[in-house]
Length: 223
Image (cartoon, rainbow, N blue to C red; front, side, top):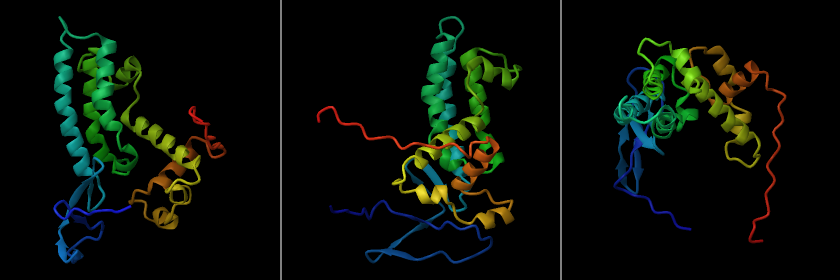
């Protein structure tokens, strides 16, 4: 198997939380300097050098707001779609974007994650036809959709247990046995990594003794 690297589309991000001026690394790819940028997109997620994920969340909000314009048109009271159809459209076009990669950008600060809450609330209001003054919690009940914080926690736990059920997963050891536990316990201002966050969530939900059975490989029908 041969891998070919593209010299036209290439960049480097120096992930570092050191404040102040510090020299950037010099990386060459086949005697060609690789430019160091402040942020880069990988698999649809924008990684910034401080790993705040604020550029990704701002870009995500901008894309979702454009899609909400379609929902506004379809929610016309005289000829628009019904409640169930609007809710399905919202889940398919907008909520799916908010869910994608939430296990990764979920490490952003609480204030940054709250940027996406107005998008979620507006989508539920358009789908349900609720007034602007309607309480947010009533929207969750009417639409049967929880807040984004609970959705991120649920999807992250599902991903965690999926990794736990597969001992050959490349992230098995790093997620189930995360590093720098003492560092995060001493530095409360630093948001811990995925494995530590899931460990805290499992302790809060009293799910520490839950055993995950590995899925047995089924015999292919052509065999």
